[in-house]
Length: 330
Ligand code: MEV
Image (cartoon, rainbow, N blue to C red; front, side, top):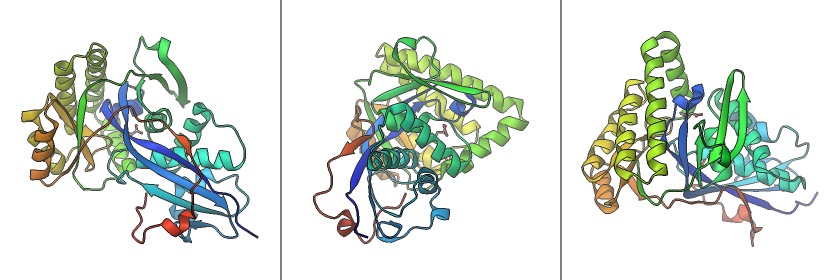
């Protein structure tokens, strides 16, 4: 057979301002999309391949889940600006982009809710636990709040699993400057979520910490709404301390957070922790970048307001010819 037409979609990464881990238990969170994207091109083919090599679906659970109703072979090409295992939502962004490209290839419409369902389903299939927060942020873009009371007028969708429900609403993207620092330590989400689950399950004290994260997140969300950078920064630093008590920080993250604090309103780990990234809220981004670099981290100044998942113009050439030899893997 001859190969089919290429379909390409891309989705942004994200960072969590407040509320990671606690959101898994239905608590509130605030998340922004970032200006780093992952794109996924697909076409019908005579074989299944990922970036030019045979794809082993057992080792690519996101692909396996999202192609569960695809009864023909496909070429898949991914291109990522989001470091994997860094807390910036690379797997949710991949899932959102792949879900949209697949629906386009089948000529099926893509609304945001359907794509969140697909992307969250892939995340659960791959890592066995977690909330729909990352999938929602990567699909919607901009900013989202989860389970924050009083946001009904900006309600986007509700997701339920078992006895947990997540009400997702749109957030006005703040005019504030954030710097992300990557420790370079790769830490997948599933094991961190599981570690917290075991801690919360056997220790009332850990459950109290999750309640405190809820209070800090609601306070931080209110600060964001009234543009109060100082108060929001304080809540971020407090959240980092609470996450550290839950056991999801590490030496490298603490080093970058402490190095940023003298030039920041607040700083914290972002995402599932155990490595990955931290984020600082600052009006001295260059100083924060220097401090992060001096401690061995990789900084970047975030451009907020990124678009959510979207179709991209078809590639002009053959994306398989453009796959770099050392392509980024998700
Ligand atoms: C990971 O970005 C955020 C966690 O809260 C997990 C989840 O919500 O699925 C740690």
